[in-house]
Every structure is written in structure tokens, then in C-alpha cells.
Length: 534
Image 1: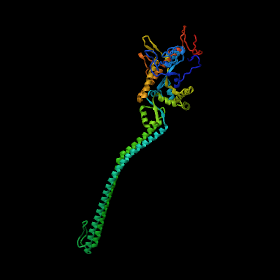
Image 2 (image 1 turned 120 degrees about the vertical axis):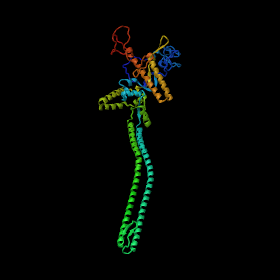
Image 3 (image 1 turned 120 degrees about the horizontal axis):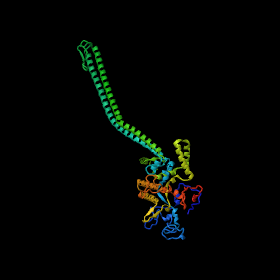
Image 4 (image 1 turned 180 degrees about the horizontal axis):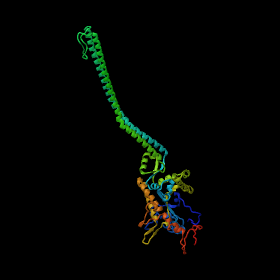
């Protein structure tokens, strides 16, 4: 047995999971306490004799070995060591948790040590630990760069596909316009031919008529006998008695005027046809622009949207860092878009992953610099964090030990079960609290083996966290767990604090066999096992 009188100092510090296992004499896996028929402790239960030692001095569970002569022998039948029952006051057990849980003192204390270490507000930390928010635990930089490239490519693809739709429609319209234009060109060519033919025919008609009149004038001699009429226009070109030379000159002038008029009409008709042709072509071309205007506007809108989307996604990508807090929807979206690039989780497991990545020496240097360079609130925060980190570095404790993966079970004689007169039992509240933890832990293990849906496992992990919180410090967070008759269960913390706690009740003052109404205080010069007389 441990000699409690021989020591120089006591130091209280965080225990590692290995240390907790080192204290333990075995794992408690069942919530049972004692068998109500035989009144003997159940195997693997909270009072198991194999773990905590025999209930009777020098006697094993099955009774094969009795008396002091078998001292130190471990029974091959029941596995109980033959020793004093007093060891049940000091031998501890442990519970291997199916999922890590946070130690309530470190996240719910004031100030929240976990919150200071991670630089997260206690409210957000609580929501992470109780499965309401996600926290990013890892970001892969290579994948981040690839994701950024993918975003740019996707934006360009969206713009290109929108442009392709417009180009396709434009091509269809241009094909239709080309057919229409060839029709317009054919009509235009036909009209030009018609005008030219009309002009040629009229000119020939005038020339033929002029030649006939000229011949008749020349035949009549030098002087005209009758009036001469130009049949093509019905115009009189010479009166009887006028010379034939005058008549011919008049004829030439009339013909020249008529030919000029015909040519002018032809030119005007051609110009008008040309104008109609150009108008028709312009209408067709502008028709394409009008028909594709809405699509072009759509492309512009799509381009703006795609670029805005790319900017937003890239910003979201750049912001993604370890310890970033995400809601369920944000997490689902990021998981869908950038699956392998990051890991995020909930609960104490995620927090533990982050804490394990912390390099205390590096963080200490960063905070030293920040403390010197900043002022006000930021400096205060840096000093707080630095104090905590320096305390960890000096003590040699690791911050991830604030997250429990192994839970110590205190010796059974410190949480006894007593039989009452009516055959009923009175038990310490701690046994109820331990049973809740074991039941929930076993249920979670089963669900994990069955690969149950995520939401069910998450709920079970949250319930395990709550059970561990109640065991360590009932009522610190939320409503306190009550037993029969609405009586608040006393947790491990309640056993230590207050007037009825271990220190003030059992360790500082002692019951003595003399009377004296004096205040009993600790004498600084006394050893821990000594008592001074007033």
C-alpha cells in the first residue's frame, strides 16, 4: 500500500490517457453493480473484484482461496487477487470511451481554457462540442490550388457555353438570311435587266422612227411641202415651206432630248432598284442583330454571373482555414464542391485533432511577437493565451489531454453500496452517473460497429458527452441530472467542494475526543498527517 506520510510536495496536473490506464487495475465494461440474489459484485461491472480487489480480507470471489497464507495469489478460477479488502479504497478502474469527450472543467470553466487555447468564443466552442456546428480540422493546400483552377475553368466553360448558344442561333439566322439575300439579289438582277431592256428598246424605237423621218425629209427636196410629224413622240418638227435642213436639225434636237430623257428614267429606275436592294440587305442584317440581342444580353449577364460566382467561390476557398466554423449547409456545400480538399468535424474528436496539430513552441513565439506589436484588446488576448501556453510548456502536459479518451473510475469503497433494513440498497450517486456513461458508451460502440447513420451516431456521441459532463460536474452545463425524488445527483466535483466536500469535511478538520469551540485551521508548519492541539 502507498505510504501517505512520506512526501515533500503535491502537484496537481493534467493526466495523460496512458497515466489514467496506468492507475487503473482493469477496464469496466458493464453498468451492473452487484447481483441482487447473491449480493456479490458482477464481473466487469462497477464493483468487480477482479479489478478492484476482494470484498472480504484474504478471500477470493469463488472462495477457492481463503486465509492469509494465500496472500498475493491470483485465483485461476475467478481471477481475484487474495489480499486485504482495504485495497478497494485505492484501486481504480477505467472506461475506454468509444469517442473522445471534452473535460467540462476546461471548456465550461471561467475563463474557458480550451477557448483561450484555440481562440474560439466559449459559445461557439460549446456548439462544436455538442454537435451543432462543424469546425475545419485540415486544409490541403495542393488541392486548394487545384480547386481554384477548377473554379476558373468552370466559369470560363459557363461563359463559353452561353456564347456557343448565341453563335449557333446566329449561324442559323445567317443561313436563313443568306437564302433570303440570294432571293433579293435575284430580284434585283431581274429588275436591272428589265430596266436596261426597256431603255434599249425605247432608244431603238426612237432611232428607227428618226431614221424614217430623216429619209422622208431628204426625199422631199430642199423645201418641205407639208408639216412633218415625229411619230415616236407625236411632235411637229417642220412646217410646210420650211427648209429640210431646219427640219433635220429640229429632228436631231428632239431625238437627242428624248434619248436623254429615256436614259435619265433608266438611271433613276436603276438607282431606285439599287436603293431598295441595299435597304432590303440592311434590313436582313439588322434582323440578325435584333433577333440575337436578347441572347447577347443573356451572355453578358451569364458572363457577369459566372465571374461573380468564381470570385465568391475563390474568396470562400481562400477563407477556408483550420478552426473555421461552418454551419451544416455551408459544410454540405463545401463538401459537394471541394470534397477532398478539407476535413471538418464536430464534437470533442474534431477539437482534439486540431489541438494535436498545435506546436506550443511556435505558437509561443508568434504570441510573443503579437504581444509586443499590438495594443488594447488584442494584446490582452495574446497575454492570456501566452500564459496558458507557457503553463503547458513548463508542466510538460499536452493540451490534448483536456479531451478525455479514457475515463478513470474511482475505487468502489469511495462510492459504496449499502444494504438497508428492508433488503433495499442505498447507493452513492456516482454509481448512477457512471452507469449512464457506461450504458451510452456501450450503445455508441454498438452503433459504430453497425455503421449506423451519421445523425444517430452524432446524437449518441452528444449524449455520451453530456453523461461525462454530469459525472465530472453535474449542473455546470444545462439542467442537472436528478435521481429518485428529484434529488440532484452529486458528481465528482461535488464530492470535493464545499463544507461537506473531501477537503473541509475529511482532510482539514478532524474529530477529536475533547471539547473546544475553536476554529480549526491548517497550521502552515504542520505536516499533512499531523494535527495541532489548540
